[in-house]
Image (tube, rainbow, N blue to C red):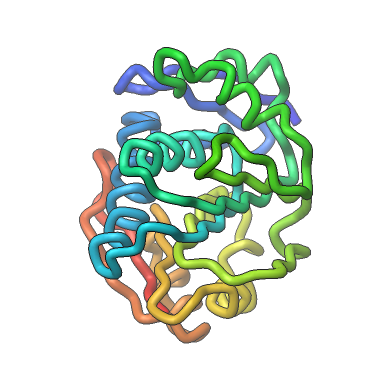
Length: 219
């Protein structure tokens, strides 16, 4: 898979997938987009709603590790316990991960561990943050547990329509605890329709810079 690093408008890096013709993150700002969609509208919303001090998160898919790193930073600053499971079929290389500028000062080794740690088994990034990377296609994924929050960060329906179907979202719905939320940057009508058919209640929210809307789906 041919990829290269690009710097987005907020100074943070992303990857460009030449085969699919898509960036892993918004070119308007990779960190800006992830904070808006996944951390603020997903993780923080769930914590504010439930008062949870410990929670489980599923990410589809891990990609550059940006969402995992931002979640680690957020949870560590608040003394939270997090179990984080991430699906990925095309892992970034060691060389690619070294060019990604998401780690805060002193976190470079931890970010490297995020990418170099073993697959398919939980690894402690800290005493309060467990990461399990699952090396598989999203369509083939099965889980041994349920989750409070799902970050749905697959490539767009234009690039991978098979990942935005009622069947996929029915699987995601089944993996969520009652009251759990799924957040995604994509708000296309076909995606909303598939989510509703799977059982979700849809909330349309203002999108990050460069995007009008995003979706928070609630079980």
